[in-house]
Length: 540
Image (cartoon, rainbow, N blue to C red):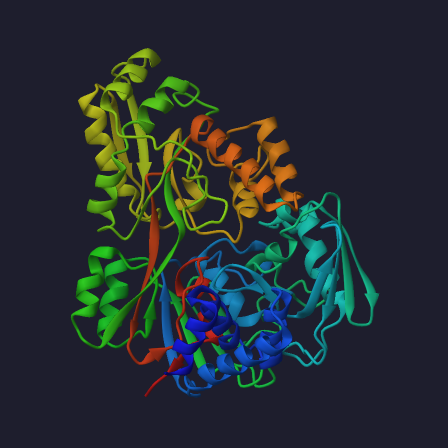
C-alpha cells in the first residue's frame, strides 16, 4: 500500500488532504506532529502518522527550474502591488507571489502559521503572534514587529483607502510585546482573526513603505518587472524562508479579458495555466490530450443586484417578482453545464460549515412572480438590466430572466456593457445590474464585506441594524453551535430582505498544460485560491 492511501485510511481523506496540503506549503514533520497533537491525538500515534505523511509527501518530489506563463481574466492600469488596494484576482495572484501574511489558509480554509510561527488567545479579543525568526524581505531587511504593526494599522487610516478597512476597523491596536512578538487587541472579540489575517489584503510589507511598485515583501518571488495593465515578471527568491521553495525560476503573468483568446493561447502552447475557463470550453481543452482542467468547488457567485435605494428596487414587490423568476436548476444546467450547485439568494454556499440547509429553497414560480409584479404597479415601464462579460455568466442569466419576465408582462431591457471598465463605471451604479463575488475565507468576512450596512461593497444598499448587531455577536461567539444559529438567522434575513439574487454557486475552472504539476484545491478561488505560484512545478 502506498503511503498516501495508508494516510487516508489512518485519519480519513479530509484530514489526510489537509496535512498533505500543509506539507506542500512547506510544513515540516514537526509542524504536522504539532497539528495532530493540537487536535487531541496521543503523542505516539501522532508521531507515527506524521512519519507516514512525510514519506507520502517525499514520494511526490517536485522538480526545480523552468519558466511558466500564466493568464488571468483581468488587466487594468489600476493593477496594484499594494495589498491594501488590491481588488481582483490578478492583484491577489501577484500579492501571493511577492508577499506573505502572518497566517495562511489551508485546503479546509483553516488558518495555519506563516510569518507567525505561533498564535494564541484566551478571549478572542487579545491575540499574541510570535514571529518566525530568520525571515528577510527581498532587499535583505529582517522582518520585525514594526513591519507587522505598520502593515496592519495602515488599513485603518482613511487616507490609505484600503479595501479591507471594514475588516480592520475592529482592531484597536497592534503593539510589539517582544523582539519577535506582536499583540493585537480588538474592540470586540473575533474568533476568526487568524482567518482574516490569512487573506490577501493583510500581507506584510516593510515599515514605512509608500511606493509599492517594487513589491518588496517576504514572498517566494521578487519583482523583475511590473507594468500595470500589461504584465508582471516574477523571479525566484533564493532567500525564501521556506526550504526548497519555490520551484519555478520565473513566472510571467498577464491578464487576457477574452476567454476564447486565453484558451487559444493555452492550446497553442503560449500559456501554461489560464484562469476563469467557461465550462463550455472544457471539452476543447481536454480533447488535445496535452491539457487538463483544474476544478475548485467554492462559493463563487454572480448575483443580480437590485438597488434598494432607488426605483424600481425601492418597491419590495418588484424585487420579490424578480427572485421568483430564477429557474435555478435549469440555469445551472444550461449556463454552467452543471459545474456548480443551486443557490438560494444568500451568499453562504453548501461547502461552508455555517451553511443553513434549513432555509426553504425559493423555487421558480411564475405565478407568484406575476402576483408580486402586478402588486408593484410598475406595469409596462421599461426596466434596464445591465450585464457584462466581466460578471461571469451575467449576460446569459440576464437573457434568461428577460424571457421569463416577458411571460408575466415585465419589460426587462438587457443592456450589455463591455468588460473593460465595468467594475469602476457600472457595478453598483445602476438600479438593476450584476456583480461577481469571489469566495471569502469565512462567513464573517463575506457578510461583513458585502452586507454590513456601511460596507463599501454593500451591493444592493440593504441596511439592517439587527443584521449588523448579529454580525458582531457571531464574530465574538466561541461556541460553534450558537454561532451557526446566528449565521442561520442572518442567511434568512438576506434571503428575505436584500436586493441580491443568487441563482447558483459556480465552480472555479482553470486550464493548464499537463506538464504543470502541484495544483490542489483551495476554496478561495481558482489557481489554488490565487496561491499557485510557490506550489507548481514543471515535469519536463
